[in-house]
Amino acid sequence: MRVKYCQKDFWFLYAAFRYTVAMRIGMIGLGRMGGNMAQRLAGGGHEVIGYAPHPPDPARLEEMHTTLAPDLPTLVAQLPAPRVVWIMVPAGDATQETVDALAKLLLPGDLIIDGGNTRYTDDIVRAAALQPKGIHYMDAGTSGGVWGLKLGYCLMVGGQPEDFQRVEPIFKTLAPPNGYLHCGAVGSGHFVKMVHNGIEYAMMQSYAEGFEIMQASRYPLDLPAIANVWMQGSVVRSWLLELTARALEQDPGLEHLQPWVEDSGEGRWTVEESINSAVPAPVIALSLMMRFRSRQENSFGARMLAAMRQQFGGHAVKSK
Ligand SMILES: NC(=O)c1ccc[n+]([C@@H]2O[C@H](COP(=O)([O-])OP(=O)(O)OC[C@H]3O[C@@H](n4cnc5c(N)ncnc54)[C@H](OP(=O)(O)O)[C@@H]3O)[C@@H](O)[C@H]2O)c1
Image (cartoon, rainbow, N blue to C red):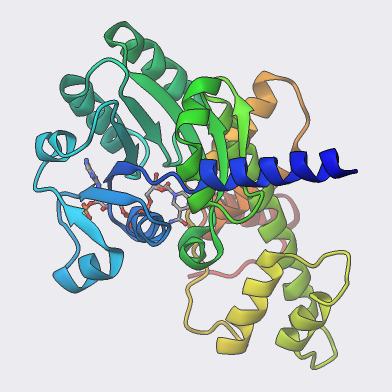
């Protein structure tokens, strides 16, 4: 019994030491995500050197407890070797440009972590391109939005196990308890994040349809109250529903919004993945299509439907 307690105590001491290791990290991109992540890291005892083309104002920088570098070479020069640089910029060209610029500045053993919403196949190409230079690369699918500063970010990480262990104190600080996972090899983190967002599209669409049916019903239903009561033990309770309740409380008719919904890549990639692997994913696919539909102010397809009905059946149409 005594031996058991000793082992337990040792483990807790080891864990405490391991997880309170302060690191110095570069954060590129200080927007909604990168700025808050820098702030959370600094709050957790890490030192953050930040860079963005248009940096935040001094008051915000002070809040973030982040040292601003005027350019990437200065940021890299302020990091101890082996360096760790986290990229939190828009996926695609901006991230690729940043990786390319860092590839010229970093040295063997240094590590790039891409936390943006990059397509996992891009990670695989990048890691392979950096490998001959000895620069390590990890992908960290990040979920939590602007609430992550307070609640922590769910992190889905891909990369070499030794790299994961090296920067685990950073993941530990950014995430809520049990909120980060080493998913596997390079690309696996963004792959899991992609599917996560595909599921998110479908969940959001489903809530939107259900609430519209209730809004159109014969009963004058209190939608914010319904969203709130569903949060209490119901099968469909979720954080998205909590946010739905919040939005409906602020504006029950959502009158301040246009019915226009953007998509940012992951939904499309999830659908493409389902096609490539012949896995049926009709709900996610349709939720993506509904976003396309939301952005059409005057659908040619809908006018085609009206035209055909008028042609074959003389059915009523609405003319302009
Ligand atoms: N917002 C979310 O809820 C969320 C959630 C998960 C993941 N993400 C992902 O996180 C990443 C950042 O998103 P965000 O919402 O923080 O975007 P954001 O608020 O628009 O901030 C983007 C940041 O990237 C910087 N940037 C843009 N182009 C750059 C370039 N070529 N080189 C260096 N820095 C550049 C911007 O600097 P300037 O302002 O000076 O141009 C800004 O600091 C994206 O990949 C996004 O998909 C976002």
